[in-house]
Image 1 (cartoon, protein in one colour):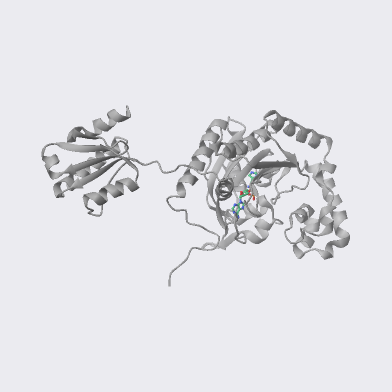
Image 2 (spheres, helix red, strand yellow):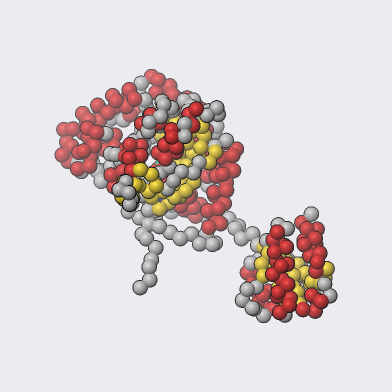
Length: 423
Ligand code: HAM
């Protein structure tokens, strides 16, 4: 019996992986420009990190984590997201004491959530995310948002919608929390058991419930926007002002609460409104999390960031019909005729590669015609043909595959010849 790939995961094969690499490269380049540095944290962490960080009333922690006991009896969880791990490292490695503040980090790697797989929703997916720790300046909120928007735009996406909201500071959230409890309490019996548990613990999560999403009380629930205190309103106003200044269009959506517990002040999502993108339209989500560093045991430190998955990024590119030329071709294919010539190409191939050229030879003992076919498949710009006779005369025949032109080159100066072509 054959063994299949686990549900909700995928193999990314040659031919597809180039687009992934292109996006990853663009993300790294942009981070360099925006001055975010890469951090690599473990794929698994102590489960407590996520219960505390992401929040134990969230769907992620309650239903979606890959948690297991290791052989030492510790509860371990495959990371469902990158913010908690980044903040853990920030605290543990005392990055708050570094001279360069704020600390601006990015990460790229697989995350794991036991969700119901569907288009755009995987159980293993790759997130690219950034986190800026240590600044309370609303300009950095705008910077983080603009980084995500620019990454999408530079890859050619145009059908994007940015929605933002403010979840306010602690005081605003507390007054809103009371209002939510009063709103839901009389009829909480009509809600799912999760929501019933959430009522006192974290009523904001009720607004994010997938099961009770159509209940009429959801539509009339008090909106956080009406509970923002003056300070929170002013902060939100500044973020909007900066976004406008950066020519980034946005919509304020007071219902945007996000699915993780650590947020306050700015929350945002970027959606694709390309036709045919599918039911899940969120490409990217993020926001401010001013209490999280303390929650994980560090000093009071503000933070903001976002994460996006490469899977949804690629789906959005497809939905907008954006195709990229990914096959670059190779510089040279070494075709050989005869045993000695074949032996010789082993070293010659190495010389070309070490000199910086992409080069390939035959490994299937093909006839010369089939070697040319292989060269075509690889989109070789040149094919250098070596026969036993040429080898004796220290010659090699180089064919330009675009023009058909052929030249005879001294065998031991083949590398120089190619260097000359590049110059
Ligand atoms: P999140 O909204 O849970 O936020 O996830 C962010 C993004 O990850 C989503 O917008 C989506 O692109 C992608 N994503 C999430 N789940 C899946 C899935 N099952 N399959 C494919 N893609 C998925 C966070 O993770 C926060 N840590 C973001 C953040 C960073 N906030 C502040 N800093």
